[in-house]
Length: 99
Image 1 (cartoon, one colour):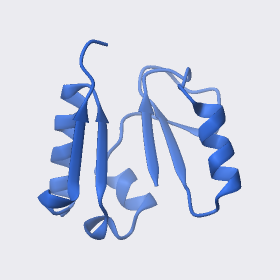
Image 2 (spheres, one colour; image 1 turned 180 degrees about the vertical axis):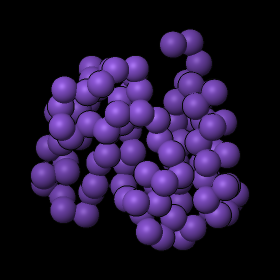
Image 3 (cartoon, rainbow, N blue to C red; image 1 turned 60 degrees about the vertical axis):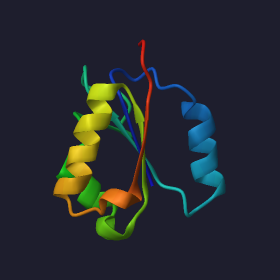
Image 4 (cartoon, rainbow, N blue to C red; image 1 turned 90 degrees about the vertical axis):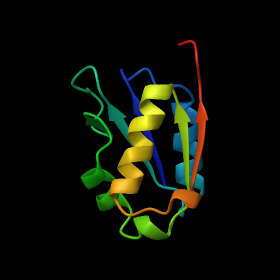
């Protein structure tokens, strides 16, 4: 499961990600858009929340997480994972600085 949060509907690699999702039935991609009301019905308005994560992954506490993005987002997603009952050792983080 990939939950991909973006400010706008200008989502990097969306075409490629959608192709993967069509080609591999075990891949599920959820797009969220935070700074506008999305026109694309595939996009969910708002930020990633614990409720959203729980809806798309009923086994949240068993999964390995890979968090990628700016430092503030990584901190927020790390806290979300911990609040949802995920094990700290199952959370991997990579921050992207400068954008």
